[in-house]
Image 1 (cartoon, rainbow, N blue to C red):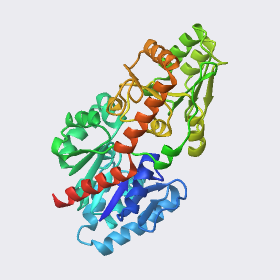
Image 2: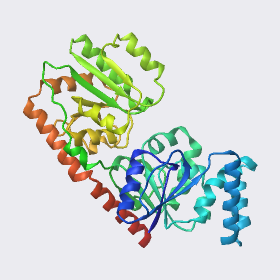
Image 3: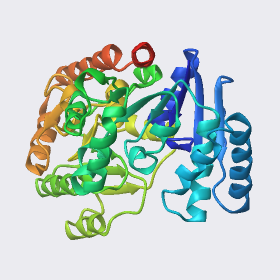
Image 4: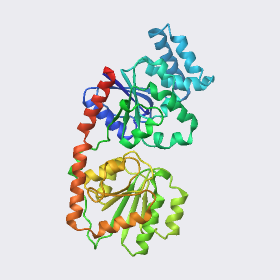
Length: 393
């Protein structure tokens, strides 16, 4: 079975790269289309069809793909190019879009799996031009709030969701959101993210009352990550003379709001900002922390929480999105309402005051959940079933 795992960028996010690796290891022939940002070594059954960024390279590439189309599909050659050109009636836009669309038409897979829902709005002609099954992943912002702020996007979902053959949802919560835009319940399969089994072998540090409490948050700088609520909580901890160090590992430019809050709350001695880390260094930093905080107001299911649970680092998360499908309060972590700094403080103090036995039990229960519900083997098996059900339908 030939499956296009389409995100538009090669390589893509950690989740999508993990999916590509798992599916190729399971014997699928994987097609990757889009703009290549750096070299990546894939298995031999992963075929990469990169589109140049711009300029003469893009023009020559598009010309070459047009000639391939003419040889393979002369009857529909003119119709297909007119369809692409009609989007904006501008030659530069035509070259850009044709450079991305034509390789897909010339190498049509059995299943075209779109990783981001907004692709539907950007390239709706794919539904008309491709003769294959369509799958769509439902995750995060693309479903939870983007269509609320963009009426055109919401209308595109309502128009094209009925044409999708199968939906992959990262959580039950997000599947319900997709139904609001016409995704049929029977076509949606919830397949959770997975984590590397190696993380289950990691050793995390334990907290003792005489230690500095090492708190960590991980995720890009974005309003939905809720870092300002975490900083409100850190101020309260400082006011109560609790000895702590709070590290935020986040990519992107630090918002002025965060800079202001750290200075205004006089937290510079307690808060450390790290602008991104390589994966192995990130996991090492995570394992040297006593507790991970996810103060987000919106998520699907946050990978960093799964990784922390696998590595034996206790987690404190808000109940946004599908997080309550993973974390049960006081059983395998701590869970609180969104936008509630006082509850962050209360749960941190609860963690500090808990016995070593309680802390170890939470760690053990968290690892059990990961082994049972978030393993690579389970994820790939469920994707295989997902694709096979679409092919049979």
